[in-house]
Image (cartoon, rainbow, N blue to C red; front, side, top):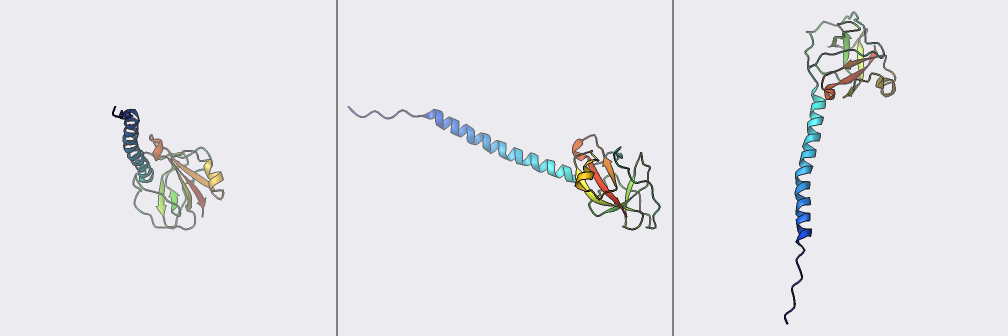
Length: 148
């Protein structure tokens, strides 16, 4: 009698193929989603800016610096920038200006939050904060500010 060929184990091969296909589809999708979130967080937003009810928002201050054009809705504020408030405490309108007396310097920008109290722990030298609240939470941010 000729020897009998061993039975093929196709169940394991099918499971392995399915696992490989799922990983090949899932990994790029997760990577693309992460990249998109990162890009959107850096992009800024077009929504209205509102002050926080936490520490005081900088009041409108006189400045010896030359007046620049009105800010654009997508103006970005970064660490080291100096700003003045052209609005009021309840409706702040920050504008970038050259650093000098009676300006506020951005110590820290905290993305994707409206919690102004985070400035107390992340930038304890801050004397004020500014909260940008957007309808899309990913575009929210807080600026921790220090009066110069």
